[in-house]
Image (cartoon, rainbow, N blue to C red; front, side):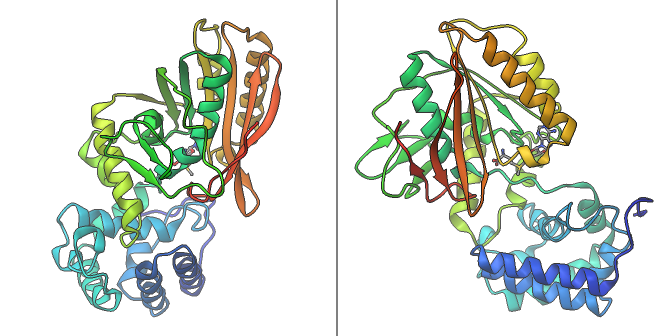
Length: 357
Ligand SMILES: C[S@@+](CC[C@H](N)C(=O)[O-])C[C@H]1O[C@@H](n2cnc3c(N)ncnc32)[C@H](O)[C@@H]1O
């Protein structure tokens, strides 16, 4: 693994501290298993053990490329592929006991035997998380557009990754007293809403769905499935099960996620009006990843397409993006350009507060 010329050298102590910080995040975000295991890895890196060998000459900037999550994803991938049976005995996602203390020697052993392959995975496979529960927040916007336009929806997702949330209308949303969607769906979102529930009495039809991502993952391929599952944390069973179920659904509902920059792709998608449908451009936790030029072009394209929108070919821009401790789900609709907040939600899509308009 050659270091790129611009990548600064990081000492083993720096890397160990970076892993320790990640361990804290894992604990804070509800993964005690990773919390303990990542601390063990930090200690190993600091004493120049096998984990340091796997990371030697790591070609990316550690924080920007989420080095620790890539590292954990590489082991998880091998566990899920059946290539690390001793380690799998302790990974809950593979039916293991969740004992991080027992997992560590098995991990060390596996690392020692597979340094080259683990180095390859860590260097080449970037973190791809698909948060299926974000659809529990986005649906607030989709149903609002369906109600206000009375038209089928043309759903265009920017930064779709594996495109799991492009099948949002095939999920079941169950808020107890009210529900929406196919009761037979393998993807069931429960307990996601607080205080209010989205307007589940509104019907919505998706006429067309398409997405883009510079690094799309094909969930229908075995390698794509492994990539998506490997970045779900192994002891977060519900999140893991949701991604797994959404992959199953993706195999039944084909969608094209084009390899493209969001600004270029949206320019093409919005070049001509599509009458008889409401076009909904949407994204969740994406805007920060666009470089300045792409972001400016993307926003300009949306605004220009909004100016051209008509009652018969309306446009909506729905986005779930950071708003401090929570995300904000904002909706702008044209003709008119009215902008409002339709919900706030946690970063992974739970704790959704629908705001009726
Ligand atoms: C944090 S992930 C969110 C994925 C998905 N939207 C979700 O909510 O689970 C950010 C996504 O933005 C994508 N991305 C990065 N730069 C982009 C760009 N210039 N245009 C479109 N998507 C981009 C990444 O590849 C990644 O899939």
